[in-house]
Figure 1 (cartoon, rainbow, N blue to C red):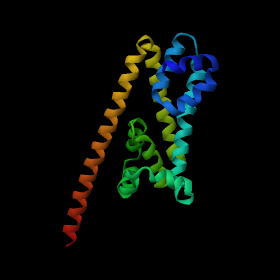
Figure 2 (cartoon, rainbow, N blue to C red):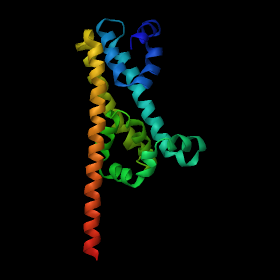
Figure 3 (tube, rainbow, N blue to C red):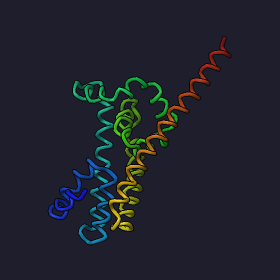
Figure 4 (cartoon, helix red, strand yellow):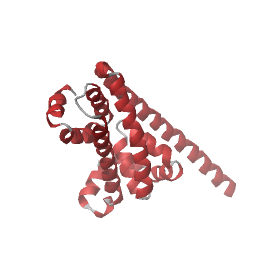
Length: 196
């Protein structure tokens, strides 16, 4: 992140926004560090980081929602074979565990993009999706800026720990999916037995 330091100091919020879109929570920690040392102001930084999280959420939802109607978005979706191969199961997760699925998909390293796309694919109402995503973003950006302000001098340590945190969340989310799928299959098998 050090290579972004001079850019942010020079261009401030203009460069902070695209970096926030690309890098996520680590940028919020770094921005908190810069707020602590008066290189950035807290309120504009918070707003820019919030937009840098919300706009990609809306974009990925849109890719999923309109993916079947556009050749380019269809190609983009096809990169995530996990969604294609487990669509019915993912739809069930969104329908039955919307808040948990959204929360975990926003925090899970490597799973965030495909799961946000899948929210659009399963046609979760946009206002429901974006309003909950905004609430999560409001809280997690505040938390990561707070980390940057509080542990500013140990930025490198905090940033490396965030990577581990995101990987752990992704593993827990994967475990949740496996367990949920197993329970669903068992319940379906029991229903079939009862019918026979």
